[in-house]
Length: 328
Image (cartoon, one colour):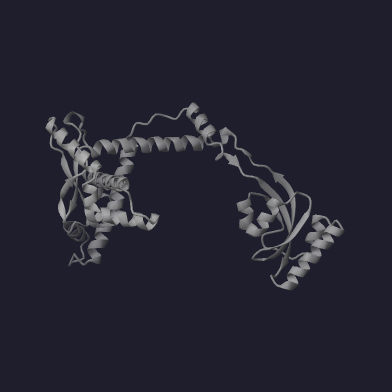
């Protein structure tokens, strides 16, 4: 699988780009290694999640993600983020757990843990450093503010999302138990309520207590299903207001249901969601800017896939020297 990726047209084009960039006078970029084992692990995760093997494009995306992780890790080290207390505490715990420090000294335990390269190999430390570098780079990006026109355009394009779902206000008579006797009792109460035109309060007086109360506020289908169960919720949202329906079984017992009022689905006013939209657009803008930043940083390296079974292969190219920038 790795060899097939390395022999692919995409990989060859990227390798050719590296050669051309070097030939045009670029300073030799730093080497950044991605192990075949790390790539294979991501491929296995993809297979388990999707049920099919990743495509060549998927694998190249995985390589890019692994390269970005290593670049961010290096930035974290250059900025001395490995000296942060959470990393120091983790190294001390690792050193103590592995009994690297004979005298029980915390600093010695950290020093010995570093000597074994645990600040790089420990997944918790590495994830923290990568996340810290990503957060720092993101905070440094100059992002334009979101204007009102962008908010209105997003609101119009995502109109279906910004709609309040239909709500129904309901009362219910509860009959405890799920046996045949409980069902017969609930059925008798329904027939009497319909025949004698009982008021809601008169019907409730003939039922059993219910821990969630008998009068429910206006609720969406999902909310009502959470309160009473899926079948009662379905019955309520299929019914017309002003009539008894049921009996409908739930995990608690049987319910006779009365729909008081229907509040139709409706658009949520823009002013109520403008802040949420602005935050979402700002986040998207930051993610796009960070992706562009990482792309520029990635281009400063010769990224190679290391495989014991085949020679190292360059999989991406460096930028010309005049476009190089200091990575963090």
